[in-house]
Image 1 (cartoon, one colour):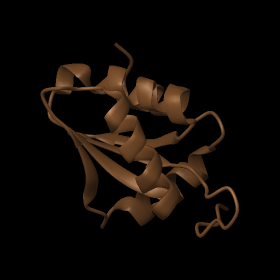
Image 2 (cartoon, one colour; image 1 turned 135 degrees about the vertical axis):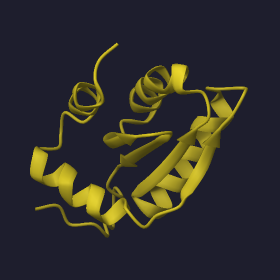
Image 3 (spheres, one colour; image 1 turned 180 degrees about the vertical axis):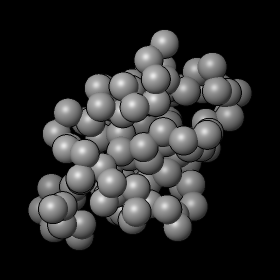
Image 4 (cartoon, one colour; image 1 turned 90 degrees about the horizontal axis):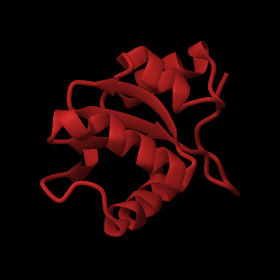
Length: 107
């Protein structure tokens, strides 16, 4: 099992360290918009994730099962192309720029 830092670096190949720090600062005050419970990963989760990431660009996902956290983060990244900016506690912070009108400007 990779460390938090290794997982974040693996699942955010398009972001450098400074950009991840910028996103972590922006995400600090955010509340989670998605909760992953007992059912874990599903197509419904991905549909909701895509809608939220398109609307906000930066979102928190709360995963209740710590044992599945890395797997869920990897599956979300693979299915959506979103970059994992942070993994802390039960929270995953994902970023994906809006395709036409990005709100967050990375350094």
